[in-house]
Image (tube, rainbow, N blue to C red; front, side, top):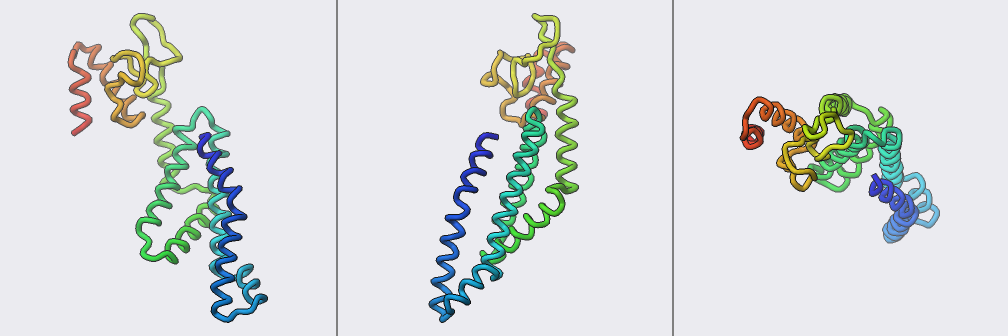
Amino acid sequence: MDDLVGYTEELTSQRTHVLGNMQTAMHEILFCEGWTQEDAEIYCEQGGAMRLISLTFDNFYALLLHIIGQSYRHPEQWEHVGKQHLAFHAKNLRLIRKYALRRSQLIFQNYIYLRDARSSGYQSTKLLAKLTEELQDAVFTDAPVVHPEAGKPKTEYACSHCHGDHHAAGNEHCDLAAFKTKDARRLAKEVARRLKAGETDAVTKVIAEAAK
């Protein structure tokens, strides 16, 4: 979260500098083609390429502010809300960059994606489904684990990754560290169930089954 805020502040501070350098470069290109100073100024203010890049920057900045706003409204749900918004839009922008055949195509598709995302309030059916899944998972996996030695639920977990108590305290001892958080917590509950049923090698079996 702090890194995201820092990046947004850095982006804001560089905006004028970057767009100014781009305008200077565009002037030089137009002058070489015989354009007058007045015509070059008009093109840089209203021309398609310059205008498009400026709008793309503004829409990208608005996206970052949206994600930061989501995170501040739900600070305790960063993993399930803010982070999911960030991952969703970052993936889509990365795919545009990966499959664009030309630089002009990359610029146009980035603009169109960010424009449409902003007009829809940065929501989509796929993102809504992902957020619903994450929040449902949080409801079912965030119940405190009962530690035998305490005999009652604790608000702090021995392992913040899997929320299980089948291994020594601390994330560095987690047998399920290779799995994503929500998967690790689901597997930890299965391990606890099997251990309670008397399966001494429950951890090994659960990991082997999940890896298939």
